[in-house]
Image 1: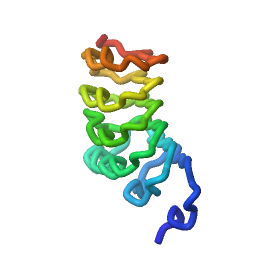
Image 2: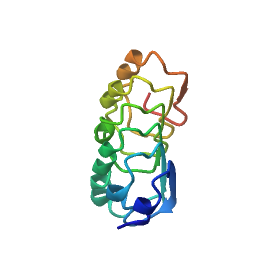
Image 3: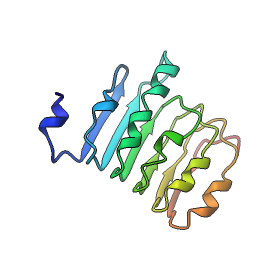
Length: 140
């Protein structure tokens, strides 16, 4: 049993400066907000990419801050259709955001400093988008 099971009303969790096992597979399904800010230059990108798959069980997630993750796609979040705010700052390997069409309620999106990102076509289907941060996206 984790501490998360003992806090059924828990709605927001922050992991700032994280480097190791984030226990993402043990998060409560009722979570509304998740903030994970990895330390720059994480040594094990394959392991960290694999840890994103448990986020698919967070169907009530409305806000996600995932800074510095080494993933290339946001596909692991496909079932998080309640997302209203998604911050992917410093995800330097991100190249595919086609899955963003799965988020009909997305109001705010930050792709700041997502180096190789080149195609934003999918954003044309997100009619509820109010805020878009493309700071330091030099390939656009």
